[in-house]
Image (cartoon, rainbow, N blue to C red; front, side):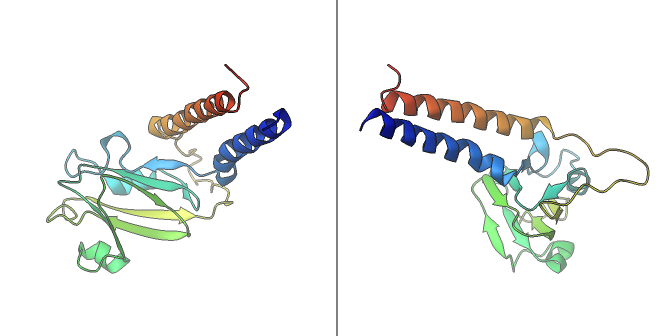
Length: 175
C-alpha cells in the first residue's frame, strides 16, 4: 500500500474511533457507583437513580458477583411487587451494559430470592437525549458525574491512543 493509502486508512481508523463515542454523547453510569449492584451495604438505589440525569444514549453498567445476583428488566407492576417470573430480559454476566434507547421509566430488579425485597431494585427515569436539564425550585444544581463515570471515559481515551499508535506501527508510519 502506498503512503497516501496508508494515510487515508489511518485517518479513517482515527475518525471512526474518536468520533464514534463523541457523536453518541452517551455516559456510562455504574449502577450503585463503586458499591455496584448488591444487597446490603445500606445502598438506596432509589436515591442513586434520583441523583443522576440519565438520557437516551447513555448506558447502565451493572457490576456484581453473578453467583449471588442477576439483573432482570421488568415492567412496573412486577417492579413494585418484586415479581421475577415475567422478566422482559435477564442479564447474568456480572458486568452487564444496558443501553438506554427510549425515554421513560426502566425497571430493574435482582431475581435472587429476597434481594428485591431488601432493596436491590432500581427505577431509572430516562429523559430525551437533547433535553436540557430542568432547573430545580430550590436552585440546587445537579450533582457532577461520579469518579467512576470519568474513569470509564479516561480509559476510552487511553485505549484510543493505544489503538492509534498500534495502527501507525502496523501501517509503517512509526518504527
